[in-house]
Length: 239
Image 1 (cartoon, rainbow, N blue to C red):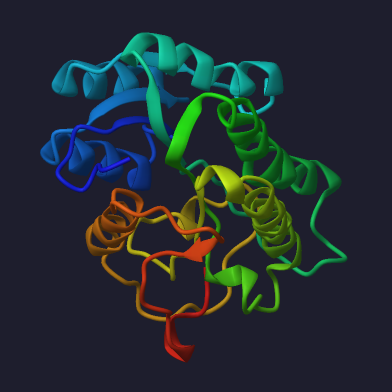
Image 2 (image 1 turned 45 degrees about the vertical axis):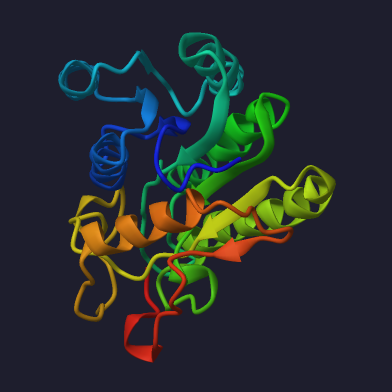
């Protein structure tokens, strides 16, 4: 698949979030064709109208609906070259105090939903394509007060690593996007608790642009890659 010059057909799940919206607009500027899935129906409709993309609502707890997104997108776009999952939610607090409801929500949104989307997408993405999901630097260096949040992201990261080995013969790039803490307001929208002290946030537009450059590169790597291509330094290993 040579998508470096644009034209790739990409499903973006989590399109109505800050990272997802940046990705959709950047893909549109790169002349890619996108199918969009998101939770906020009003924002989804506006984004779809602005890009001319097919769109579909998604509920992270509806795993069957999540796994059905790629078949729908492949039909709508006439094929599928890649999938990017940007859904995510945060919750903070000491491990002994995080509520069971919040822990369940973290794993449903941060792990089970992306897994279902990519599991359903694997048979539909062409050889040399990509399957990508955002995890975060918290996987490498979990801070105190992030045990459940970090565990949900680490579960997804582990799953992506195994998937990469399973799809190696097809040259499908399985990309684990471990972004540093970004200036999106994500931590402030936690479903429970307050975030620990965090480093200065990085530019989300630059991070998304670097990720898309990696995803749309002509040669798909045979092992999972951490994107953006640069690794966050100690000051940025937070979320």
